Image (tube, rainbow, N blue to C red):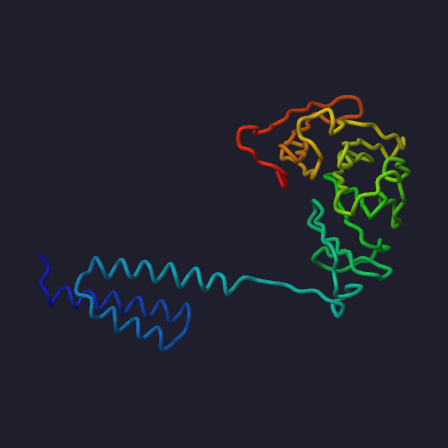
Amino acid sequence: MISRKRRHWLGNVVSGHLISFLRNVCGTSHYLFALYGEMRRIPSISRLLSLVIALIIHVVTGRAEQRSFWRFWDAQDGLRESYTRTLAVSPNGTIWAVHGDVDKMSLIDGYGITMLPNLTRARVTVSGAGQAWARTERNVYLLQGDNWVSQPIPELAEHTSRFKDFEIVPLEKDCVLLLLPTRLLHYNGASQITTVVKQAGQTRLGRFNEIIRSSDGGVWVAGEHGVGKLSSITDEKSEWAEYVPDSLRMRDFRQP
């Protein structure tokens, strides 16, 4: 058995080492010494060690959050303007910043900033191969060199819904999927051929809402009544599976 005197001495030693550690981590403060005073009154070593562990976790995680490294860019750093409407990140880490009603968008690669012609109200998406596509309210563009080239897709000319009802997901080179509320399209930019992959009326999903890329190279399609998974995507072939939870009475699925 450890004597009462020995326990107090050991508690003081542990407390002293802890305070030295906390001073190095977060500096001297009145709050720190108030904690120290409370710790000296704890006779039980087991309770003291519990408090030590809790304090270390709290202080270290708090300091880690305070030391998070943030970098900021604005017009003074080379952006075309500080206001940014949308952002996209390419596979190599380059950030595409689309601004407001200005003539250029900004590309940030961590070393410098370059400019490309801006598209008003555009949302840029970059494929796994690094090919950049952009969509506006009524058009799809493919970046060729340093210029955005509008793609002739008649189905978009017929589409009159709001901006957010129209989504794109780039696939292999020169190909992209387009999601409209009533259909899913496959477009080949090299041949300029559009193919209907799936009509909303042919599924149990109802109206199509959103499309996102899956981790295995396919895509998820969120609909009014459930979600669908499209895989093995090519011009001529694709595999489709549906997940509609009828018994849960859930509606308007998004972000699958």
